[in-house]
Length: 323
Length: 271
Image (tube, rainbow over all chains, first blue to last red; front, side):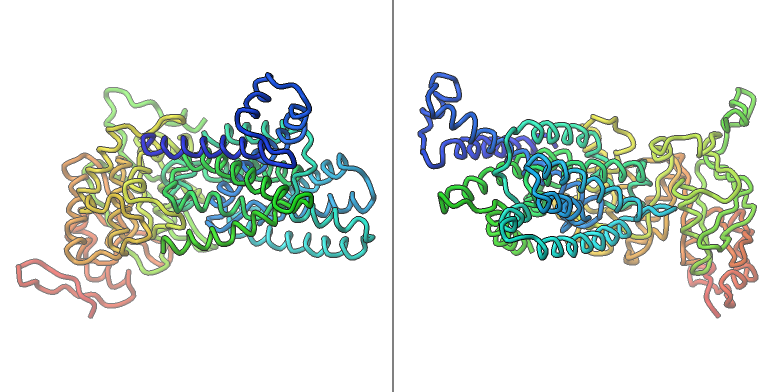
């Protein structure tokens, strides 16, 4: 098992390192690898150090954390809902966050308020969906999925409503937020800490998730406390998604395509799939964000546009290669 | 608190049966599938469960596996109340072959067989060489050894059935609960797999409780039978006592008659 996992994890770590180096070296002022090394080791202390350490590094690390959180949340959500095509936003967490965030923007409050609002909106939506899906009895994945989709549709209507009544000057900021935008990440640590904690909390569940993927009854028959596991997975996936959405808005496709691609490439075992998703999701979003801020510089694209443009063909390719 | 009601087995007492069902009442969707059922299953026994569609055979198996709570009564596994045991402990003692398997997610044949080890492994423990060997042995037993690296969703219905049985063999419980084990299997595999499973009981000290729709397979492989009638009553006992024309005709709501087989045995046929 581990023998088969090691090469994949090592190559993904290399990919993550390369993506981060590329993100740090690329931008309005390009930098060679030796120059970058000098900055990172503290040998260089000029303006390039300020540029790297205060602008590019927080953003790159933040992008990595957001991508990792989304991919891990997507992998968890897919098992929870028994649907390999589920994504972290499917249950309306991003919709709840968006309504709250846009509402705060409409009131004209600053970035900090927007983030706080988004996080509270995400948590509120998570509790609302769970409360309704659970009702008074037990909840099935299908009931959770349908409840989530309906609530998400409701949030969608509210988002359209807010966009309609908003003044022209706030629209651009709102659209960027909705498409996923990493330019507001000031400190990368909250995302990185949540990603690490989320991954550490989900790894002990990973073998049980392998069993759960074979069906709830099979999992119960093999000794998995299914209700407890589902609750843990729902809370974990929701908190990861809520944090990611709070930091970057709704970045499309990472949470759907990364775990799915890794599954198609042979990552069936969740003990491998979860850390691999964190690495690949992180690397992918770092690369996408680097492209988003450099392709049309000085104009910046919302990173969600890039992930979707890359994600769609990549996903279709993977799908057709295997079937 | 439930465990204290049952005295600890001492030297003089006969060993507790593998499975003892006491005054069990269970139901699903408002229908009672059994009322006041009592059952003792000992090692080496093969029980067949017969009944019409919707009589509650599957519900009974799920209840015995601890996946559903009974309305009343107790289920004892080797003298210990099922409710006092953790899910993991139950899964080490009781294995359940489900009617159908789910494969929404890709996994190889070997990976699927290996999940049978789940209840035996600790939280951080990975499958070791002996677990891998157990999985390969089970795959050989069901003739799937050559398909080890195939993805489950590319298998035929019968191959999936054999894989589910292999997973159960890897789980290696003391009590096998089998829900229509011959589903999707061709004639030869019906016989080889029932030979294999009943051998676990007869010569391996395990016990089998299987839902079957074929009375003749039940007559051939089971030493005990449990009939679930539509009105919630049950009839259980040694196969020779239960296999009577009137019992079977009442069970299925259709006349069943015995016929002589060319090899001298007896076959049960619908009139």
